[in-house]
Length: 40
Image 1 (tube, rainbow, N blue to C red):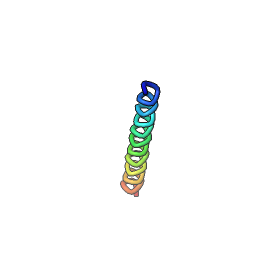
Image 2: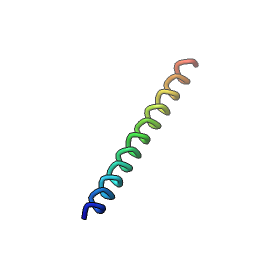
Image 3: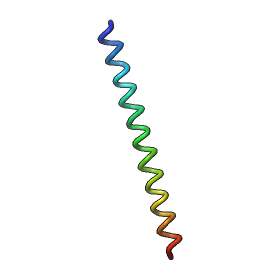
Image 4: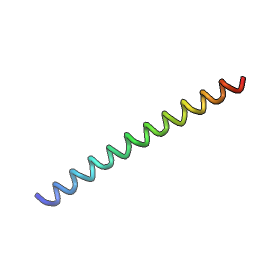
């Protein structure tokens, strides 16, 4: 039971990390596009 609990936390942690990474990529992409349009 303890192992299963730890395993569950790791899965949750990985999902949280994936979501944060996805948000970071989206934010970076939007910033890049915005900066490119401002230069024109």
